[in-house]
Length: 101
Image (cartoon, rainbow, N blue to C red):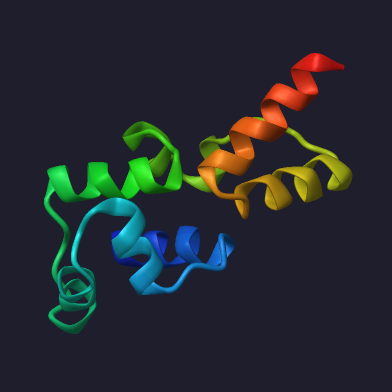
């Protein structure tokens, strides 16, 4: 598994720059960019901060595509992609709205 590629994929799915990931994770941008420049792996504590920024668990991060057994329709995937682009505050508001229906 290419951990750096997976971080990049999660970041790009959300439309985030490295700088935005750094802000959301509490890590410095220089730390994140040095992983790529030096082809280094992040420490577990750093990876946990990255996962928290993505709002995913560490175990979900390490799942391989074939291990994800959830089957979604194209419409459901589109909805999830849109929600993932929202800020955490916006996600909370949306969740409250949906629960009120």
